Amino acid sequence: QVQLVESGGGLVQAGGSLRLSCAASGRTLFVNGWFRQAPGKEREFVAGISSSGGNTAYADSVKGRFTISRDNAKNTVYLRMNSLKPEDTAVYYCAVRSALSFRDIYLKVDDYPYWGQGIQVTVSS
Image (cartoon, rainbow, N blue to C red; front, side, top):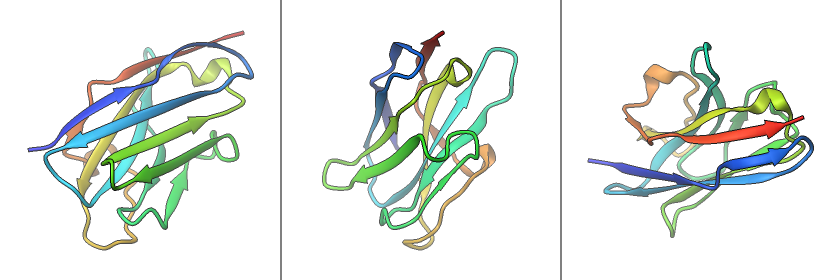
């Protein structure tokens, strides 16, 4: 079983920055994704990283502003969010799945069996 604990969310003004963390226990060498869900909207992919950390992927809406990274020694994945906009306001979720190769990244909600509890990010204008 995998347990995920997210931290680092909060309230920030537009243009500001936050760093989310996702600490995993119970398993190692997994593929990670960050997703978000705004009120009344479907959960959407934000960023993903392969188990090796060598491959990353981003939604077009966050490309150039967000950076996903991982520290496998700490079983932790990070999402650095810069130049935040009000439209980034959402509950952010960390998700993991087993890795079929060191380079795989998965972009769909249904690809991930394990999810964190979610953490609120609010960007004020």
